[in-house]
Length: 256
View 1 (spheres, rainbow, N blue to C red):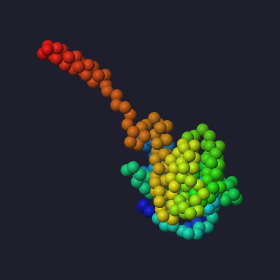
View 2: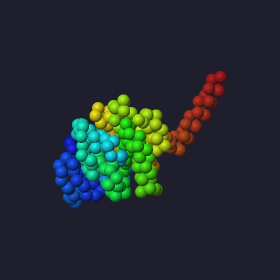
View 3: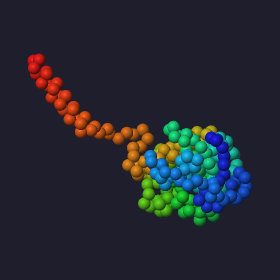
View 4: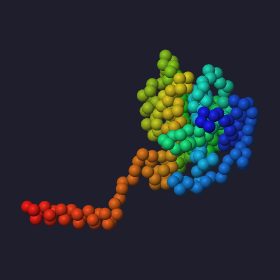
């Protein structure tokens, strides 16, 4: 159900911080991918709903867990233990199409960097998060982008850049214009979010799903959502139109 928080296992073994227990993915928990003529038979589905594997990246302390928990549980925690690696699921209807977001909330601490390559290979889309109150985290956002490019050099990977904690204006160290400039460099959408106020949190996740869908459709040569291919009329229609035009001209000449 929408709004349900379900810690699950992702690409590797992890500890769920809500329940303080380790979990493993069972074969029975994952259905075999079902053919989908509109998109791709290899895409992951569960119960007939497309599953989107999303990875949240960023320095420690920027509010990755707070943003994720705001999205899945509509709650804000002032204090959170440093994340090792947690996964949550959230259902949503985006542009009229149901989606199941499988979100991996990753560690920003240096001691957990050994896990990065693994979850970067597993993710379909990435939220790169920095804090507008921490210039170092903003600079590190570029490093995370480079890491993604290094691991997935041949892919056009869906991204969304978010500058969190924009409600702390008195502590701001990074301007909104700097964030927009970096997003243009990445070639991705950009949001300034507030996990505390739940501002643009849903927008960031939903936009990332749209980016994934758009790139999938582009790869398959399908029009993006809201985009239509130019209509090509049949040869018969074109021939009939020519005769109609000629007939109208002749009739106009005879009346003159």
